[in-house]
Length: 89
Image (cartoon, rainbow, N blue to C red):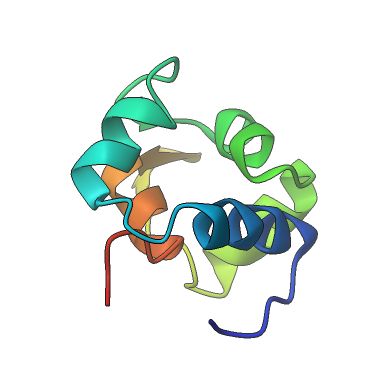
């Protein structure tokens, strides 16, 4: 696994270490089922367990892909799962 810079990444990596065979489809269905398909910054920061400020830093640095609609960021679940490297060998 990679080195984690943010606390939320560390928490997510702990979850991944406990479930190494989790596919992207399983993660989409199980881990994020109570969230909408496209999330806002507050929802993503809640999932990652980080502040909104840290979430904005991830977006600015290009570590987490997003869509920008007007002044608001929208993050599809698929991009969040991709950021967490779930289901990748």
